Length: 160
Image 1 (cartoon, rainbow, N blue to C red):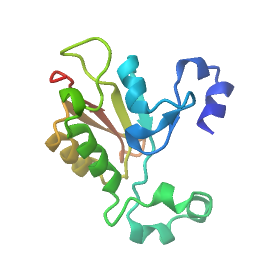
Image 2: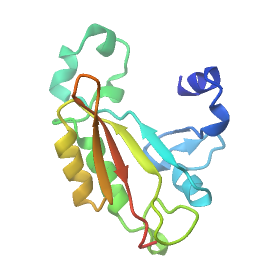
Image 3: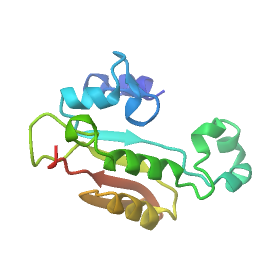
Image 4: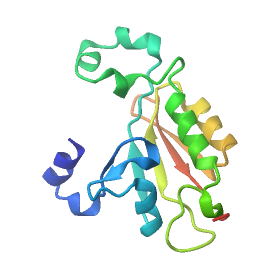
């Protein structure tokens, strides 16, 4: 669907799509996202992860719970399982002594900015999860109703 939307808006040549589990997701060229990031500079990675607490899924609006697979909604007991996994993956040293998001360009650069959709009351906790894992900066953006909606995470790669 994202690929079709990019084609419809004439931006598909500016986007690399990947599908799968975290940084092992494969691009359309069958390269892992982790490897693709090592080979080129990405400006931005966007993700709409599952962030609904398990107990709340059955109470969602029918147009949401009836059209989305449970896997795309269920964020675990408190809705934060994905964010914890991602923060742990980002914080874990890799082979060759680097972070999982090394970009072309050398020391002192920032890895691609991560934009992650979050639940409307999850901003503070998501920020704390990534800050405690070593994020260089976390900014929570609110939607037009003033509710937490997107976590913007910058990850330093100075130790790469």
